[in-house]
Amino acid sequence: MAAATCSADALATMFGGNTTNAMGAASLICDQLNSVATRFTDTTYAVDSTYLLFSAYLVFSMQLGFAMLCAGSVRAKNTMNIMLTNVLDAAAGGLFYYLFGFAFAFGTPSNGFIGKHNFALKDIPSSDFDYSYFLYQWAFAIAAAGITSGSIAERTQFVAYLIYSAFLTGFVYPVVSHWFWSVDGWASASNLDDLFLGSGVIDFAGSGVVHMVGGIAGLYGALIEGPRIGRFDHTGRSVALRGHSASLVVLGTFLLWFGWYGFNPGSFTKILSPYESGNYYGQWSAVGRTAVTTTLAGCTAALTTLFGKRMISGHWNVTDVCNGLLGGFAAITAGCSVVDPWAAIICGFVAACVLTGCNMLAEKFKYDDPLEAAQLHGGCGAWGIIFTALFARKKYVNEVYPGKPDRPYGLFMGGGGKLLAAHVIQILVIFGFVSATMGPLFLILRKLKLLRISAEDETAGMDMTRHGGFAYVYHDEGSDDPKLVGGGLPMRKIEPASSATLP
Image (cartoon, rainbow, N blue to C red; front, side, top):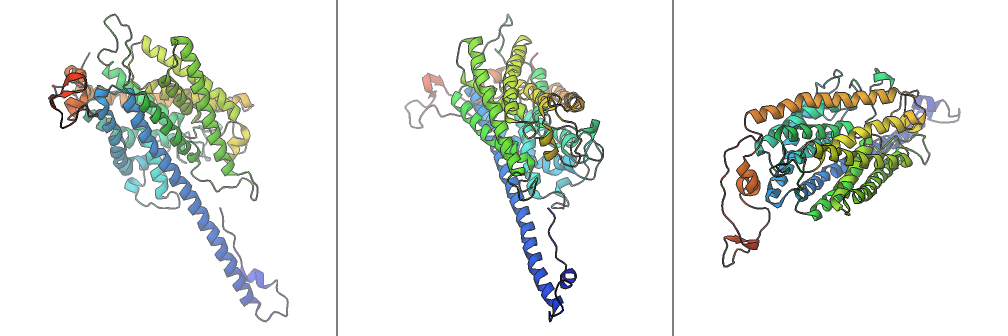
């Protein structure tokens, strides 16, 4: 926002001839006015930075949500392992995103494919970025890595987690985010000098950039590793390997719900931007609308899943409802800022159907994903990209992406098919790029016997064989027989078996 300025020379000419010291009076008045204008400018920066930092904290809190969701969705014998991977996603992701990721994603000026400045935050803060922007984008990067960890849970060597997490947050995710979010990106809606198909891609908070990237990476990890032991019997029939704590699943879901209010509304990155100065309606209204569309999509998806699963299985299943809720959130993430609340309800309803359909296909093809991460984030994320191209409203598109008033918008809203074409291409290029990078990485890890744990370790559980003990204390230190845990299960040290790739 440009600061108002006062010219003493111009003001002095307005004083009458009887003024003793017109220039002195004008200078005094202008100094005071300029001081006030400067304070307003400083306040604008402070308010926007505070808003962005608070949003970053909210998105980071989603890591706790991922940890609780993952812990509740795996069996008790692997709780320590999955919790540790969530911690390391954030820690390793922090270093690699600092060294390389942020520069690849947003380093400007750059070409349309990859950024090439600001490695290790060199020359930051600047007129382009402050530290708060890095923190916010880092929280997004580790969210993508957290998605992938759920797909390969309960059977993956710890070193493989570290390698894929560093590669995903340091290179794969940053390149994709550069394409669609950087001002230089070849398909970015902010690249006004060269808008792709005249519209660019409207992926506001990352149904494609975050959720599809994490989901597709998880898809390849789970496919290359194969299903968990016992997931399908010798006849190919599906066997449910249920997580050990529905309570943790619900806790994680609510934490993710809470964090999503930083994920989607926070993607404006600033709040003090009036659309019409002095009017009640401004970017703060768009932020509120984005929170509402996010809420409605998730709620609708949860209820749709509830009744849909009831008709299919005959049960009211809380875990399925939680996954349906998250599927609605993943879908609305792309268009949350540019659609009406009523459209968000449609988004959530279809997202629940997409998730259910993807889960049926996964079972049919004997694909095992303990968190349904590829189906939820990949499938629902892809639907969210298509949804945005159908329902984006012209008024909102022009407000959120100013500078090109004739920009294409949603097909069903009268905006033509250019935005839909751009979004179909987005889905294809994300799938292709992640396939070409993460697929070979997992294949190399398997070839080097660094990917999957041995059958013996998987059967015993990684907490005992890899992490020194169970996540839960089953007996008191002073009990008569400390070798026994709850139910008389013998407690003994199990050494890791040699790693072997399962067919």
